[in-house]
Image (tube, rainbow, N blue to C red):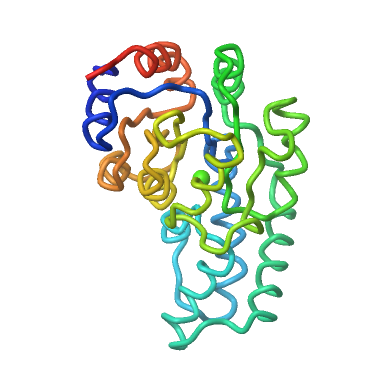
Length: 247
Ligand code: CA
C-alpha cells in the first residue's frame, strides 16, 4: 500500500499544493461502533411487517442516510410518495425500540487505537453521524472520553441534507475551523464516502461490513482499509505523509 501516492493523488485531484492533518471527521456506526448488524436488523423488523418489500442487505447500503431519506426512499418505492412526517417519526421510534431489544452494541475493535493516535498527534476529532439515535450517542463519552465534546458532534438532527450530501462534512469542517485539505474523513459506507469526497476532504474508508471494497473505491474513497485495527497500524504513516507530501 503506497500511502504517499494516495496523498499525492488527492492533492492533484483537488488542486491544492499540499495538505495537513488538523482534524478528523469521524462517522459513528460501523466506524466507532460495531452497530451495523443491529441497525440492519432493527430496520428490517420495523419495515418488513408493514408489507413493504425490503431485504436486509439494502439497509447496509442505505447506511449513513438520515431517517427522512431512508424512510422516504422505501415509501416512494412502495407507494410512490414520501412518508408523512408523523408516520416517519413513528417508524423511527419503532426502529429505535427494535434496536434497544437487540444485544448491546460494542465499540469497534481498533477504534480506540485510532482515536488515541489522532489525539496524540493533536488532530481534532469531530463526530459526523447521520444517526440521531440516543442509544449510542449516550455511550460516546464513556467509550471515547474527551474525543467528541460539544460542539464537535454533528448528528442527523443538525443537518438538512444527510449523506451523501456534503453538508454534514462541510459542517464538521466549519466546527473544527479547518479547510477541506486540512482534514480527513473516516467512513465505512459508500454514501458516507460520497459525502466526504463531495466535501473535498481526503476520505479514508474502513470496510467493516459485508460490502465489496470496490464499492468504497467506486464511491471515491482515497484509501480503503479492511478494519479499524488495520487502519490504526497505518495511521501514523498516513498522518506523516499528509503533513509532508508536496507536489
Ligand atoms: Ca457508518
